[in-house]
Length: 274
View 1 (cartoon, rainbow, N blue to C red):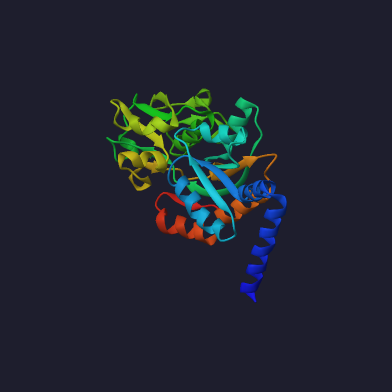
View 2 (view 1 turned 45 degrees about the horizontal axis):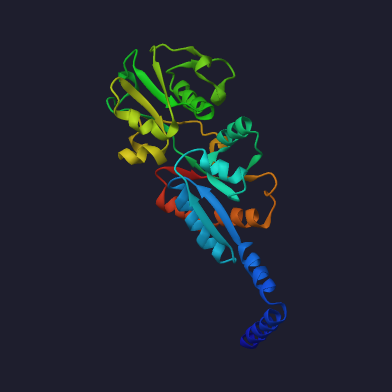
């Protein structure tokens, strides 16, 4: 019975093509295109997660097409300009900063994982060994700068203005007992600061510190108080957040297959957040 149904469907389609010509061909192409979900991502493990989600989505008839970019702007530009349906590369505060700076309407859809972030030191194994007057490398974007400073405060190395928390900036540093000098560096280039002379502490994510052979277990200290706002998020636009494509993508990204991948392959660098 199933085989007959397939044959009849093919015959009906053939009649439709004969009657309507190339017009129906274009309609068929458009229908196929509607099942393609274009996702912009930057680097592993974000790209790996998208690939695993694509396997899951394929079983529901969706084709996830990943576009890999090499900076921290392109993926947001692609989504906001409708070149991509969604992105998977950032946390919510970073997205909010982009919206404010570019007058865009990106929205967070679903947190996927929390990266284990912290500070690394090439020369020192204990916090007490860190010398006075040394240089500390931190991100130069506002959202990640605040997170880095909050981690230093957790360790008692600085004190921020009351209420600053992870929204703090260098201007909010009220007490700096070790007289740290600050080196503000683009997030993508922080790993290079690790071997810089006079730099004793470098903040970084597992994704970026891995390129010099380090992982969170090598950190001098990691973030203690994990804030869910900094979970790496699936991001879309206000105008497509409720679309079938985004719902299908969210389902695939929060599947047991993706969770197992995160737990089995990346437990040393991240924690699933769904």
